[in-house]
Length: 293
Image (cartoon, rainbow, N blue to C red; front, top):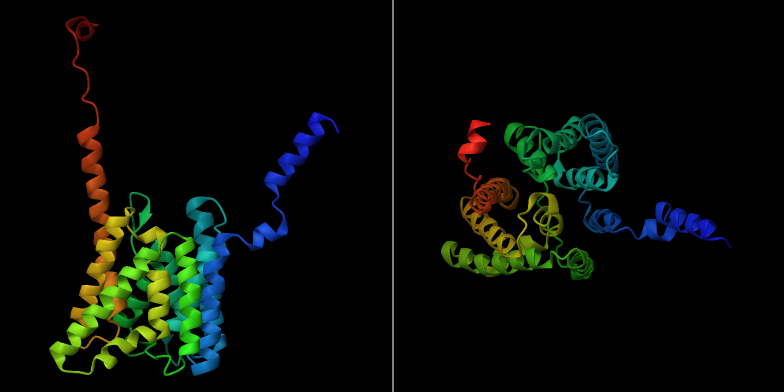
């Protein structure tokens, strides 16, 4: 075989990866996992309004992503992120009507392109869309608040797979920090309000918290870059959630991330700008000869 033929084969291998490498693409792991949450939760406890409404949310999310990505970025975005947003909306939203699912999914994706600072979107898409509808259309929508009950087999499967995925993505410390903070603050809440500690800890077994812990707070696009910063921010989210829960807010984790996440990104960008200005070399002074030229 000639060197040119060998080079051609190598180029083809690089530009056209084999089918099994496409399947093992890390971007497909979160969609597979979130689909598992949906199937396990719905078959065990009926967490979905309907498969049709969830499918509508997924389609609306992916169509919006494709259109806006093509218009504003000039390319077709990878569908994994939009799929996660749509299925999250389908799981977390409750409404007797169909339109909130399509609107929430479209609004979630649109926030990625409309609410940006220095080329970076600030809100986790599904968190933005769901919080917006819970606040603006509370008469028509509600959020998921069901727990897994005593079926710990389902809980263990979801937690193990979720932990493996965030570990592979090198974001396990975010989920682990949140879980530890939630448990400690749940004990504090139980002491403050006088409720049994089991009732304060039980929400973490619900599917809303599964999505929140493994997808929303670990979203690479909407978390600060440094490991230390990520730990601090997620601890603050847990504290704000506790305060909201003390105020009887059912959707405390969603609102806490909505309130804490974007300011954290803005502070990080502000620190970056100050650091660049501080280390930028001063402009050389003009000599008399250059000044006269």
